[in-house]
Length: 295
Image 1: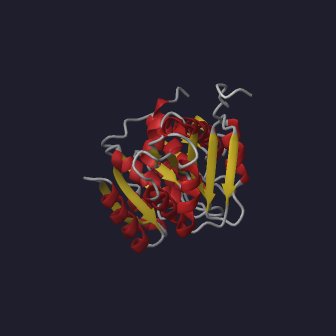
Image 2: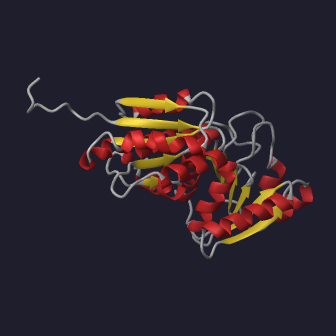
């Protein structure tokens, strides 16, 4: 090869994972999104991130750094947020690469849930209830709905946990209208459903958070989104493959129905990383990507 002939710069994604074994799922999606090479590192603590980022930012010229990016995953979202913070601190002036946080798929799943709900109703001013709000996806759903201007009730079996979610949401979103509610008892749930137009359930597997009888009695509900893919249904009567179908007079989405859009958002977010070297894609930016998708 002559000195004048340049080696093509391939797209490299560096996967930083807090779990001992980096996610195979995330690696496959990256390849399907057009990444040429995925370098995966597992069992990471924040103190381990700097040198890995240095390996990314010192190997290519500034104009070529957009061909390198970092994906932060793992099953623990709090750990992922710490890795993201450590990566951002490792940059030196223009020597930086774009970052995407999607630990446990929380950002892409929450974004997909809010996007599908927004296809059927105006979210600004809408009264929404997030069930299972103390989990990683529920927290992000609440955050995105508050950002959209919804009046958000964050539900949990524990009012203390719901209150913590409400406080965290207000800290992230200026002017957030968010109220904590206990939903563990039948009467509590009935009270929380009063006037609600949108319900998004993001509880863990094995728990029905909204029985059908209470759902059908809540006549103001227009859209229901269940993000639990493991039986029993998180919202009783909503099936996994439901994608905008009518269930008891309500527009319904199940986990599989939302999952198709989640995958599209995931791939589009990875592709966006290589458009420049200075992006930081957290849940708000991931939502913007999802809103731009045609379907």
